[in-house]
Every structure is written in structure tokens, then in C-alpha cells.
Amino acid sequence: MEQYRNFNAIIEKAIVDNWHLDALTDYKGITLQFHDVARKIEKLHILFENGGVVKGDKIALCGRNCSSWAVAFLATLTYGAVAVPILHEFTAEQIHNIVNHSEAKFLFVGDVVATIIDEAKMPLLEGIINIPDYSLAVSRTEKLTYAREHLNEMFGKKYPKYFRKNHVSYHREANGDELAMVNYTSGTTGFSKGVMVPYRALWSNYDFAEAVLGDKVKHGDNTISILPMAHMYGMAFEFIFEFLHGCHIYYLTRTPSPAIIAQAFTDIKPAVIISVPLIIEKIIRKKVLPKIQTNKMRLLLSMPVINKKVTQRICEHVTGAFGGNFYEVIIGGAAFNQEIESFVRRIGFRYTVGYGATECAPIICYADYKTFAPGSCGRAALHMEVKIDSPDPENTPGEILAKGPNVMLGYYKNEEATRQAIDADGWYHTGDLGTMDSRGNVFIKGRSKNMLLGSNGQNIYPEEIEDKLNSMAMVVESIVVQRGDKLVGLVFPDYDEAKEMGLNHDDLAGVMEQNRMALNDILPAYSRLSTIELAEEEFAKTPKKSIKRFLYQ
Image 1 (cartoon, rainbow, N blue to C red):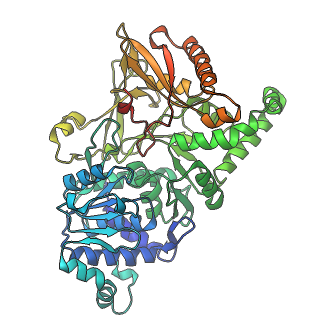
Image 2: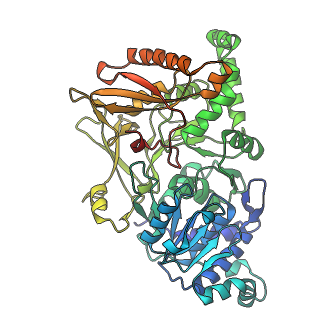
Image 3: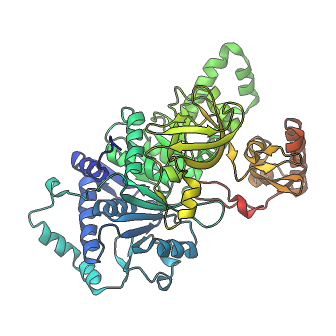
């Protein structure tokens, strides 16, 4: 593509321009400045070279978010190798499969992952490197072992008069189609596919973020990385953009609970917040709604004269819960609950909802909060085209198709799946169903593969039913499944609240039956629930917090 700019050159420039600024911090731990990142990258390049890594070789990374993970990723790209990020929540068998399928030469592992993998089941690896300190967990060549033991000495010999800005020189990709990453999708329906992400897709996503946030977020501003960097959403918009823009990124290095995240927002006061709906919904439900769902507050909200001042105060309270310093909260990865969206919209909270896919690295649609149409997921993002495969896109849902530099090269070693996903004209078929209004706003109706067929051939979108059910009393989360010609709601209830209220299992069942009747009153006959069943524990989820539906069919 004509306007494509060399991506590794942008990494190089970001490091040199921000040399003495703070770059990466493990929350309540160490901070690396940009020059520290450059030194560590250089040392890893020495290790790669002595480990026999050549340009185009695969290097896998599997561990929780932290500064050392980020540096290892940057070192991989700037060396000219291909990064294979692996979600640390994957099982040992999945990790082995991905390492073997990708033919990775090195594997970086976090402290927890290191305890579950079996090196014997990954015969192609030359070495396994511990992410926290880059020590060797496994070395299969003497040269690699020697290089790690003498790394500081080798670094000193290469740069005898100290390592300076002018020494920062990185691999220049040949063109935008050169492979940068293979990202294995979390996939809610079985075995993951390796998405081949070219440099043009990384550049295009960065260029988009720079265009929409570059003048809102300043160099040196604080940001928080909550989503896994091994997932494209967290990678592109909580790491790559911020690092290249000269921001200071804080990593929540342990699996973050809503309480830890809320505390981090208060401490760090991020300039922009990137999140999945579940995190926003939990903080609002736990920290905000209990304080405003009082009789006094309801009375004040119902009085027109006072209403505006009250909603303004509530908005200030909600904004404060997220640190109070952000330009906007960008939500993506899954559908936003309509009750919560309606609430934050009513109080004037600065939020927007985007849409993407790993196959587009990831952005497809976005709109700034000032022009965002409620209920939508924005409009086609910079550099991208979007259309609905429907004879009447405004009224009849059809598959959402996307085209542009963000689109992947294809699935690694899977030409058949690639042909199914990208048509002859270059359109990526998302598998999502949606409509588009006259202004180009896209409204997602559900996954085409999740769509259920009613007894008379009606299309039933379970996500729309679940969204309504999730807003009802004592419901934490739900899935709607089809059994024969009946629809059944599986609900994980709020057991903590039930315990506080002294409710037993039968009481909860009674609440759910009332919910079912209320829900059916607002649904068409063909999509009504025949029964609701209680789940004993939370539903299993992918790392981007989508429920693994295939486990519950």
C-alpha cells in the first residue's frame, strides 16, 4: 500500500525520541525507561543471534503481561523474527500444539506457564527462556548456553564505550506484506487458528490510533495494560500505540480482579482506557450502582429541575472510579450490556464502543465518543471499508465484511480456512451479523454461527436475549441454548448477594422464574425461554471474556 511506513523504523524512532522517559512499569514494581528497553532489546538480539535465530524464524511468548514480555516482543520484531504470542490461560496441551504448529525456535515463558509445560513435547525448540529475567530454562545448544552465561561480557565487547541512541538500528521489513506475527485466536469453538498478521496491519492499526487519539494523549501520559498482550486488542491499543506514542504503560502483572483494577485506575489515572465490557460493567455494578440506587437518589432523578445536576454528579462519581483523567473509555471485544450502556449514556459518561477481529489486527469499526451512535460499534475505521452482505443493510441483518490493510494474510498452514475467510475480492468475512444505518454506523446482531433457527424458520440471536436477561434481578451472566424446539436460559446468579439477603437455592429459582416471565413478556413468541437453569459456577471464558459457548450446547 502506498502510504505504508516501515513499522520497525517507527519503533526505533519512538525509543530514540523518548530515550529518558519512563516506558514500562510493572504495577508496584520496577520501571524501565525507553533507553533501558533499548539495552534489553540489544542483549536479546545477541542471544537470538547466538541461538541460531535467522530472520523469519518464529519466537513464541507465553506469560502474563509484564515489562519483560513487552521487551521480548519488541526484540523479536526488531530482529526480523516472527512473534507468536500465546495466551497464558491456554492449557499445556494447547501451548505445545501452538509451539509445534508454528515451528517456533524459542519460547519465552512466564513463571506460572514454566511449571505446566513439558519441553519433551516441543522437540523443535532450541531454547526456553524465562520471561522475568531472561534466564535459560532449557538450552539445546552449547552456543546458546555460552551466550546466556557471557551475555553482559558480549554486550560490553560490542559496545565498549557505552550503548547510545546512535546504536539503535533495527530490521527493516521488505514491504507491508512481510509477516510480523502469527496470533492464534482464542476461539470459542474448538482449536485455534494461526492468524498471519503482516507489518502493514500493525502499521495501519497504529496509524488509526495515532489519528484518533494522538492529539488527546500526550507523550509521557500514564496508561494501563489490563487485557492480555497476547490478544490483538490488548496488543494494538494498550501496548503498541502507547509505546510508539511515548506513553508510560503500567502492567497489572497478576490476573486483575475488579478491585485491583479500580485501585490501579485511582493510582495511575490513565489518559485513555481500553477495556472489554465485563470489566466496565463489574466496576459500575459493584462500585457505582449500589450508591445511587437509593430511594432518595431515585426521587432526585425523577425531578426535572434537579435531574441535570444529579446526573452530572453521578457522572463525576463514575468518571472518578476510572481515575478521572481519561479522554474516553473505549470498549470492545464483546457486546456492551444495554442496561449499563443506557445508564452511562444518560449521565453523559465519555465512552465509545469499537469493533474488531484478530484477523484485522484488530480494528474494523470505531467512532469518537462525541459522534458515537448509542447501540452501535462505530463506523469503518481509518484505512478500512465495511459493508453488510444483505439486500437491505439498514433493516435486514447480514454478515459484516471488512476490507483494507488491516486484513490478515491468511491462516498459517491452513489454505482452506483462509479461502473461507477472505473472498476473491479481498473482503474478510467476519462471521458476525449486523446492520448499517445511512451514516455508516454498524449495529451488531450476533455471531452467525451462534444464530439459532426457530421452529418456523425464524432467526434467533441469543446475544440479544442474553443482554436483556443479564439486566434482570440476581443475574450475573447467562447463555441461551436450544434444546429441540425449546430455548433454555442458563444463568450464573449473584450468589454473594443471595447469601447477604438470606436466599436459598429455591428462592433463587423463584427469582429466575419471575425473570423468565418478565423477559418473555418483551420477546416475540418464537424467542421466548421455556425454562431457566441455575449454574453453580461462572461460565468458562476466553481471555477476552467471551463465554465458551461450545461447552454448553
